[in-house]
Length: 302
Ligand SMILES: NC(=O)c1ccc[n+]([C@@H]2O[C@H](COP(=O)([O-])OP(=O)(O)OC[C@H]3O[C@@H](n4cnc5c(N)ncnc54)[C@H](OP(=O)(O)O)[C@@H]3O)[C@@H](O)[C@H]2O)c1
Image (cartoon, rainbow, N blue to C red):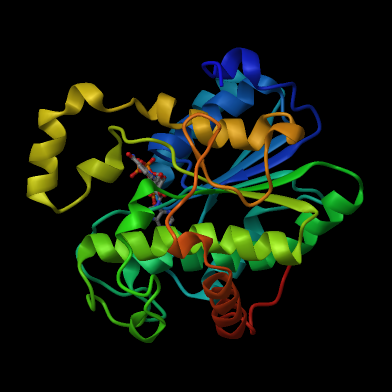
């Protein structure tokens, strides 16, 4: 795969509507700023930080004045009712071509979401599953109209650090049943398995999990692991910039459809790679789908 150049390799996106979670910082912010130069009709992005959201809107408008930009304030760890309200109020479109589940935290101190789920599970996996349940009808309608619809999950090589069994369903309501990185790995594994489950049920949507690489963003700055900070500062010359980390998700969201295999895992940039054995486990993907569907059975789609 030749080097990816977002300026040249992203095609014209006229008419397309994009939704990016976690667009206020790091990779998500870069995704918004790269995409806006390619003329999409509308970019929606989420985050909690309103000031950062307003700064991204201003920067994006300056780069792509013909694209509509909307910041949707939405905390992925709030209740499903609040997430629904935020998306219903913020997202007003009859089509959705590209959904990028990017927001996330890593090795955060133990905690629970408003509904009592482990914090990394809530931020990285379950909050996105809620939004996808809300937006699934509009994604499906867009695909029915003949459009190329993509659902990208920004997962991580860190999925390899999931705990024994991969997803400890019985422990998802405990703050620290396993270590910080195992909880991160569990949530990142779920993002890959969710794509697998989506492909089986909704093959008309291209669902692709991507690892962005390892780089210097607020994800690392916000971790409470001091040993990790020391290791990373020692190898800082190896770390990618936030802009470079955006390349793989951008590739998956915009490369010609024939270059992607639905449900496959890609490392930077566009390299199809086998994820862990657990991430290839069909039965675990089905179990996660069933757990998620039961858990979210009261979430009414928009
Ligand atoms: N950086 C890396 O080396 C690396 C490596 C592998 C995978 N990744 C993955 O890349 C994704 C993006 O990370 P990043 O490196 O760009 O980190 P970042 O700079 O810390 O950005 C994280 C984004 O997620 C949002 N977010 C976090 N918790 C949220 C919540 N509860 N509700 C709503 N939004 C929330 C943040 O928005 P607010 O602060 O506005 O809420 C922010 O926009 C993550 O999923 C991460 O796992 C990163």
